[in-house]
Every structure is written in structure tokens, then in C-alpha cells.
Amino acid sequence: MKKKKIPLRKCIVCQEMHPKKELLRVVRTPDERIVIDLTGRAAGRGTYVCRRETCMTPDTFASGKWKKVLERALNMTISQEQYDQFRSDWMELIDK
Image (cartoon, rainbow, N blue to C red; front, top):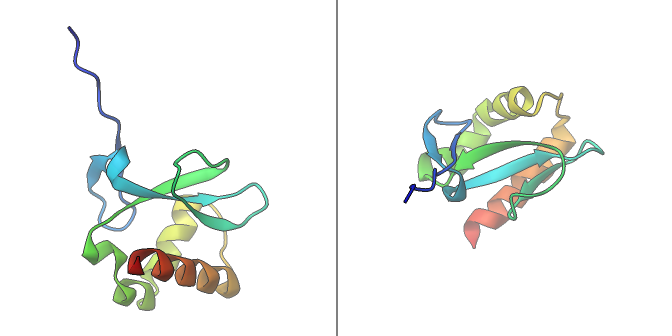
């Protein structure tokens, strides 16, 4: 009996490989919005972030590192308004 291969993805913040199911997916939708995809199946270009505190802290967002990393991973220029909206959605998610 063959073992099922576990898909791995790289976190864009810490650059470490993790099983896909342990990561959160961030997607650039076809209409150029940035959304957090909890289902892992939303249409658009996606990237992954692990759930470690160091990758998800408000300090990481404040440093500006996140915006540059997201722009590179999603292959788009992110306006400050888009980034602020994404950031508030993200903070809401991690507070739950």
C-alpha cells in the first residue's frame, strides 16, 4: 500500500515549508482584490502564510515587510488602501 503524499507549500514570511492544510491562503482575485481564502479553492493567484505568531503579528504588518512580500508573491502592485483593507481583515481573522 502506497503512502499518500502530503502537499507542502512555503510560507512567504518565514520561507519555511509546511503541509498545505496548516497554512492560510491569500489570493489575488481576477478583479485585483486581495482576499484571505479559508477554503483553499478561490480563483486567482494564491500564496501561503503559516499560522506561527512570528508570521502573523501586528508588528510584522507595521514594519512594511508584509506589503513588499505580498506584492512579490501575488505579482501585483498593492495600493495603500488595498493593503489597509487586507490588514484589517487579517487582524479580524487572527483575533478569532
